[in-house]
Length: 151
Image (tube, rainbow, N blue to C red; front, side):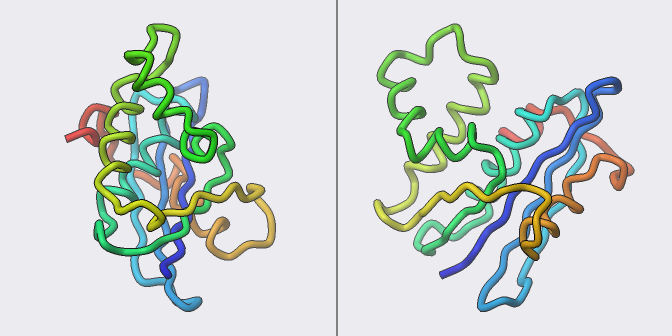
């Protein structure tokens, strides 16, 4: 089973953000992704990190996705996405475009192939620390608008 660590960052004063993803198999880093986003928020960056990981992952692959955002994890483990879709994507939700796309990508996987687990951020976990470093907005030279990652 592949382990995927995702993280997002944003500096609230400038709205420059980024996300980072680490794909790890048997303790070995197989792939990393690091992208800049502007304008952004931490929530947008966290959601786009998870969305991008799902878009990259082979749909038949079994994976455990670790994220330090309880919001992202609860979208799956507490079935928030499914509930919001049933409700017709209520206007009270922020980032509906990203949430809809996240739900669409998630539904492309066979049931049981994805496990979502919350992990405490900035702790002694190699995968989480790597994703955190990859997400740091200061390391990006180019930035794309959030909608770019929804294609």
